[in-house]
Image (cartoon, rainbow, N blue to C red; front, side, top):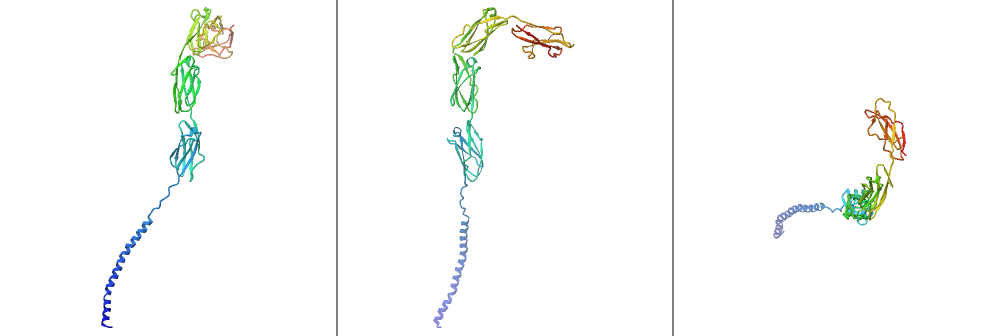
Amino acid sequence: MSFGQNRDAEGTLSNLPALVSRARRAILCLGLLLPALFTWGCSGIVSGQNTTASQPPPQTFSISGTITPVTGGNGATITVTGAANATATANSSGNFTVSGLANGTYTITPSHAGYSFSPSSMNVTISNASVTTGISFTATALTFGISGTLNPAIGGSGATVTLSGPASSTTTSDGAGNYSFSGLANGMYAVTPSHAGYTFNPGTQTATINGANVTGVNFTAQANQTFTISGTLSPTTGGSGATVALTGAAVATTTADGAGNYTFSGLGNGAYTVTPTSTGYAFTPTSQSVAISGANVLGLNFTANAVAAHTVALSWTSSTSSTATGYNVYRSTVTGTGYVKITPLPLSAALFSFTDTNVLSGTTYFYVTTAVDATGIESSFSNEAIAAIP
């Protein structure tokens, strides 16, 4: 080898340590970078594994039904309780749907002012499907009444009372002036009475039914014009001082004057009955019926007939009881029963007779007596005595 060649080789060898040093530095850098690269790669993988996927919303269902008739169903409120709570309103056909319900058991309850429902509520279970059949309710309108009185009875009795509003009707007040309307739904009504010869105060009243009866819708009757009934009881021996009774559209009594004349005044139109009475007299006719219709009634006369006085004399034997201190007398118009005591106090034990002066012609009487001791204890009835009054 030439000298020049040795230098080249030597020069080459002399560079070897530098190359080795650079290689070592490259390996060292790579060793430092690999952990960093590994860490970056791992963190990217971990981040991808922690990402949460979106979940679908839970499935819900509905309950549908019907309320009949539509008058009660339209606008009714449907309340759902149970697995969830919700409300809905029935449409004009009475149909309803409650939606957004999860699986579970529910109670369905309808309500509507002025109505009751059959059934009052219903249970239903949702199990992965909407319930669209078998849910039906029947609405029944709640009804109430309006009542009152037309006073006084002379003007109220037999009056016509008219009802208007959500329902229309007429009725006739009874003999005491009472009236009533029934079967009415909630709402505002007007009540108007009328009666020939009378005006009413107030003329009309409103009554509002709101889930309850309305009572005491009263009116006062005022006669437009009044009339009289008059007559004579003759002869005056029987008519003078007699009592005359009036019944019917008005009730009253009066006393006939010394000439047997009587008068009832201030009477409205209506039907009346006049009946005279006087001790010791019977009247022909015994009573008379008459109707006032826009005019006075005159000449309603009666004839008084003297009634012969009758008495019944009773007697009995003394009681065999040593404790008897007196006697009671009983009378009946039916044999064997219905006896009424006619002696206010027991008769003396020393008396064995009694005269009954309060008897009527054409009547048969049945008498019994009892013995009484000092404590008021009576014996059983005696045998029955009979007296027929001619």
